[in-house]
Length: 157
Length: 149
Image (cartoon, rainbow over all chains, first blue to last red; front, side, top):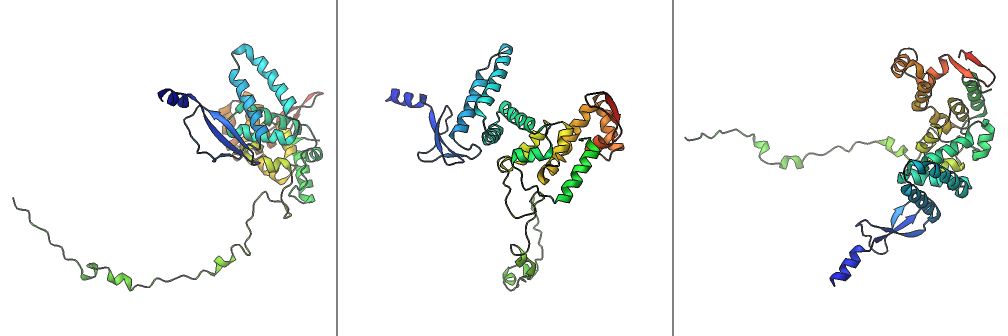
C-alpha cells in the first residue's frame, strides 16, 4: 500500500489544456497542481496543438543549450527552425503571441524581427498588399498629406 | 479612589432611529441615461471610417503591445513609412519610446544627459520633434551630406 502511494506520488500529474481553437491536449507536469478529471485549463493565447508543439520544441532546445560554444549552434538551429516551421504569417503571429504570453523571449524576439524585416525597406503600397491591410481608416486626402509630410520630414523619397 | 461618572445629555431624537423611516429619499430623474446604448456610440481612435471589422490578419492576431515590439526593431526611416500604412500604425508609431531610442542612438556622442536636457529645452520634451528638427548627417550610400530639417 505504501509502495502504491509512493508510485502515485512519483508519477507526474497531467494537466489538460484547452487551446483557442477548442483542441485539448494532456501535458505532463511535475507540479503538485491537480486538475479534476474533465476540467481543462484554458490556454487562449495558444491557437492549437501544433503551435503548442512548436513552442515546446523551441523552449526544450534552448533549455538544453550549453555554454558559449553552443551559441553558434543555437543561432543556426533558430534560423533552421524559423525557415522550416514558419511557412505562413498565421503561424508567425501565433508563435509571437504564444511566446510572449509564455515568456519565451528568444522566440518572441525572432518573430518580431522577422515581421520587422518583412516590412522594412518596402514602399507603403507594398506593405499594405503584403499584410492585407485594405481598410486604412483614413480618407485619401489624409493619407496623401501624411505621406507628403513623412517624405518632407524623414526623407523617404 | 472613586471615579465620578460623567453624565452627558443626549438629545431625545438620537435615542431611537425611528425618525429615519419617515424620511423619503428623492429619486433623481436622469433622462440622459436613456441615451446610452441608443444614440451614444463608443468611439475608438483606431476604428476605421466604415463599420466593417478590420480584416487584416496582423491586426486580428497581434495586440498593440506586439505591434510596438515590431516597430521597436525598425529604423526611424522605416517608422516614417509605417506611419503611412494605416491609422492604427500611425498612432502606434507616435509612441515616444521609439523616437527616444532613435534620438539617443543617432546622437549618442552628445551623451544621454545632454540629449535629455536638449529635448526638454529646445523640443518641448518631444523626441519625435527632436528627430524631425535637429540637424543630422544622413548616409545615402553615395556620400554623406548634412540634412537640415
